[in-house]
Length: 568
Image 1 (tube, one colour):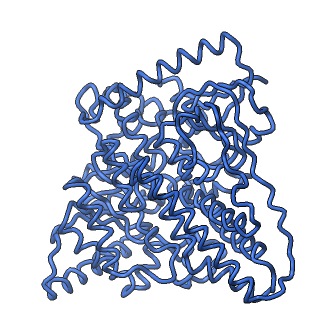
Image 2: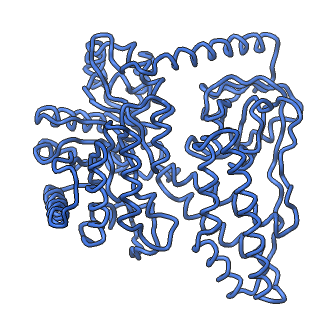
Image 3: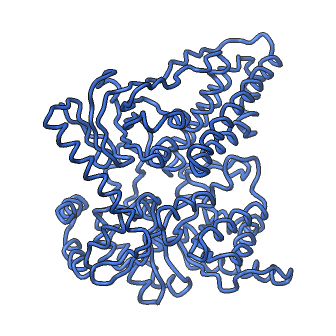
């Protein structure tokens, strides 16, 4: 087969010779060390050198690419200095008496296993960052500082089995025509850097076994098509695609400053999902109209104790100020399920997704939760902050959460602290229970935000990470779409707005359905904002409403997905 299908990550057309980069074999075996103390010193020296190397990468990225691109490597420095990582390695050295190489490998493998098992895609991709920093320390310990380094001398398409963020940072954009990696996803740091640099990127398992160094290859980073044998006809076709893509980029840039309005005047607010204040820059760069989801749990992770009120206040204030009065929807702590935080000492559960997580944890640990609510309210004085509660399934939970918020407001008033007295309060709609009671909930909140990832999981009773049942996880399933309709209808009947902040928000096939159902806001990865805006401007709401009527007559997810393909 000369044409294979990959997973598109960063759009663009690449034509060029293959530069094959395979991971260097570690060959680390358990070996007893002569001295535990000497091994600890050896590990610390290697870790400190690794920090120095990453700081150099950070400075290089800062000067050549900018603060946004460089911030990835600040996270790597934090990981290298993280007490859980450092103490974890020292603990293995002390308990087993092994060499530092084995200890770092052991701790790395444990962290990677935890992150790769998480349901949240963003968190799964952090496993690659753990591999990157650990691999750097191991190479220093082994004296192979330059092992696996890039040796590109001419413009090429890079093919790799395990491309790390630091590999991507080393690349000279003028020499990298495109990247195909065997692992990873759209939220991996390697993918983020590639998108920032405008480099086409695809994921294709086993690709390194299908190509040779120097082979001519072409691929489409938007569709995922990879041409293993480039004929003159294919070459001409891909050159035409390159010119079309160049024109498309120019067209999308011109959309900045315009609104996401259909041909018959229906406007949809396009927002960005973020996990840290610096991510607000990406939303602004893509002309996002707001932040539809700030995942605050990332402020709590990879540290020994919970962030203080002042730390959180600073993060929320910075984000609000960056958005200059545009809405910033901040979800309160959503820990539990696939997101573990050791210092919270959450008991191990047989089924954590149905257990002690999100609002359930916060309502059980009120003094702990009030720290976040205080920070959020104080920051609301500096911008248009909206507070959103996750995983609400009953009216009792929502009433209790609102009462606690009012208690915090009273405390701040007595202290003379300024805050927005009428800060909007909303809730995630991510369970069938919430969807079925949407008309009741709508009388208690200012907005709904539909978390499609969890709504699909709970509606279909399926773990999408379980390969045996993953085929049942579908955002096209009629049961899911009917619940979305009920949520939106209930919101509008009660005078509040409804949005989507799950992955389905940026699904181009489903976009006409979202418009037809009357969604007010779609929040997505910032890079999707302009392409979705362009699509909205080409739609008619009346046509979309007629499409919804036809789609809702279909009985299966497969029928709906197939029907939507012919509507694009």
